[in-house]
Image 1 (cartoon, helix red, strand yellow):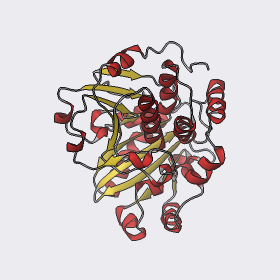
Image 2: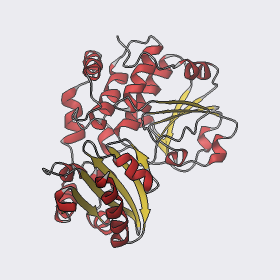
Image 3: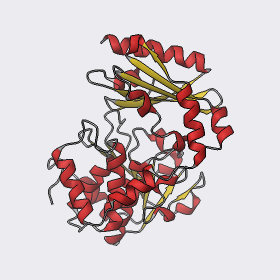
Image 4: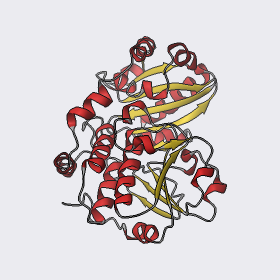
Amino acid sequence: MKFLYEDVNWQTVKDALCVANKIHVIAHVSPDSDTIGSQIALYHAFTSKGFDVVMHNIDPVPRICRYLQGSELITHGEDFSALDGCDTIVAVDAGAFSRLGMLSSYVEGKTLINIDHHASNTLYGDINVVDARYCATGAMVYDLIQSYDLSFNEAMASPIYAAVLTDTASFRLSTVTADTHRMVANLLEAGASTEQASREIYQNFPKQRFDLLKYALDSLDVKHHGCSAWISVPYVMYEKTGMGAEDSEGFIDYARSIAGVCVAVFLREESPNIWKLSLRGQYPYDVGALAASLGGGGHKYASGCSLNGSLEQVSTQVFDAVSVCLQT
């Protein structure tokens, strides 16, 4: 099989892992399919090499990832005491240390390996393999597993497929290349199922999600003379419908799909007056720089950050930043 990127040096990662006593693989807070898929694929690859590996995150595995073999082994919560003995931490898909949700004291005396594809990554690890050319962190894991000369099986292939499928918006983004599709062909030959992934990720929603979607679409607004589209969901609507952050995944795509829209904005209130901003941009508008101006980061055409204040205050702040973005 061919590496996606031959020039990436995985040797420093492998050298650190070969002397590890116990490895903790961690995903970022509010995990998505890319971070969970990467985490599970690494778990199966590392254990097949004889490494002692545990998976623990601050937040639980999202519903759409629970079909993946090994997801049931991921523990979660703020108590890290069960991870005593871990001397090596592998963080996947987290652009900053704060995205891991753990105290800095937990990392003291341990080797922290940072594997990520976000251009805004702060290089917080002792070892950093960060490359924005990859369409997903799962694709980086694909290359790392290949560097061990391991044969892919269904347990490794399915989570990587889920990671790549979701982080490329079902292979619709500019990060998808011919080599991406060749990788996917290899994953399918190893046992990943397109039908299962599609059913579990896109066709298995509770009815309450659509109650939430109705409210979100009712908030849809177009600004900047049709160049930006906005959707917002306040915290009270999550409470009312019994839904969580993962249940509004993909809502921004409705704003992005409107003809003429160059920047899509989704504001989700995580708790009272604390908002998660998601941004999607069309060429040539750099929403990564836009998010950075607001204290966040991400990719050139997909990014985000957190903001504090009322919806009116936050919207005004974001409106001004979007205005600057559309003028550049």
